[in-house]
Length: 415
View 1 (cartoon, rainbow, N blue to C red):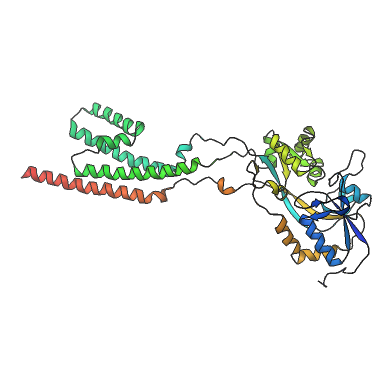
View 2 (cartoon, rainbow, N blue to C red; view 1 turned 120 degrees about the vertical axis):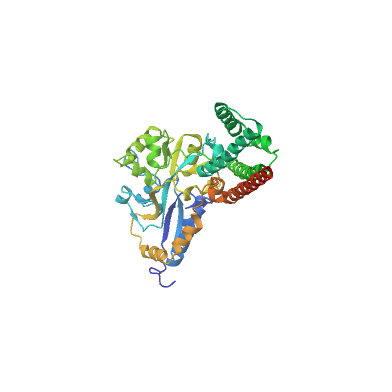
C-alpha cells in the first residue's frame, strides 16, 4: 500500500470521539480501554494502519452527536470537538450549523431517510374479498356459460313437461333463473336436471358439471391461499401524507441532521412537521434509535430513521416502513483542526474499500419477509382457457348429438 500518501510514522496519538450506535459504532469495555466494533471500527483500523499512526478511542459521556443548547453552546460530540478534547468525531453528518465550527471529510456513506411506524394490529378487511380470487372478465365468462345451461334447462323442462301460456312461460323463466342462478347455483341446477332421457341433454349437463367442479376447485384453492395472507393498511405513503393527512407526529434523534432540516424549514410540510415535533416533546425528540423505536411502538408516531439504523429489528414484523423515502443521512469524519489524511480517505473510497465496508455493515434488508405480505394475483382468463374449452367442446358435442336425435326422431315418424 505504498501508493497511499501520508504514510509516515508519528508519535502523536489521535483521539477519536465515539458514541454507541449500531451498526456504525459498537463500543465495549471500560473507558480506559474501549474496543470499537462496527463500520467505523474496521474503517479506523484500516486507515490508521496505512498511515501508521496510533489512535485512542474516547467515549462521549452523553452519547450524543451534538446540538446547540439554549445558551448557544454545543453538547455531545460537537462540544468535544469545539473544546479540542478530541481530534476527530466519527459518523457526524454535515449541517449548516456544524460546518461553522468544524470541518468535514468527504462522505463515507449515505442513506435515505425512511418513516418507521408500528404495524396496525387488525388486518384490513375487504367486503368484496370473496370475489377477489377471480378477475372481472373471468367472473363474466363463468356467469355467461352458466346462463346458457340455465336457459337450456328451463327450455328442456318446459318442453317435455307441459305447454303453458306465454305469460306463465315468462313467469316460470324468471322463477328458474332466480332459483337456479341466485339461490343455490349450481347444485340445484345439476341435481334437478341430471336425470334426463336424451343423450344430448345429458351431455350438456355432464360437461357443465365438469366445468363447475374444475371452476370451484380453482376458486377454493385461490381463496384458501388468500385467507392465509394478512393485508395490513398503510397509514401514510410519504412524509407529506404523514404530517398533513394523519394525526401521527414525527420522532427524531437529537443531534441528527434531520432536526436541523425541520428547524430551519420555511416550506410545508416541514414547517408543520416541526410544529408537531415541538408540540409532542419529549416523545418526539429522543436520545437514540432504540428510544425512537420504543416510542413508535407505544405511541401513534413515525420515527424518522434509516433502514440501516434499525437492523436489530429487521425481522420484527410489528414494524414497517412507509413506501417513499426522502432526504439523505450521510456519515463523515469531523475535525476541528487540520487533519492531513483526507487524501487517504479519498483513495480508500476510490479503490472500493469503503463500498465493501458499507455492504458488510449496512445490510439493506426489509424489516420482515416481504414474501409473506405479497397478495396473490387473482385468476385471469388465460388460466381458465382449458376449463372453458372443455366446456365448449361438451356443448358442441351435445349439439351434434341433439341434431342426430332430432334427425332419427323425424326419420322414425316418417317411417
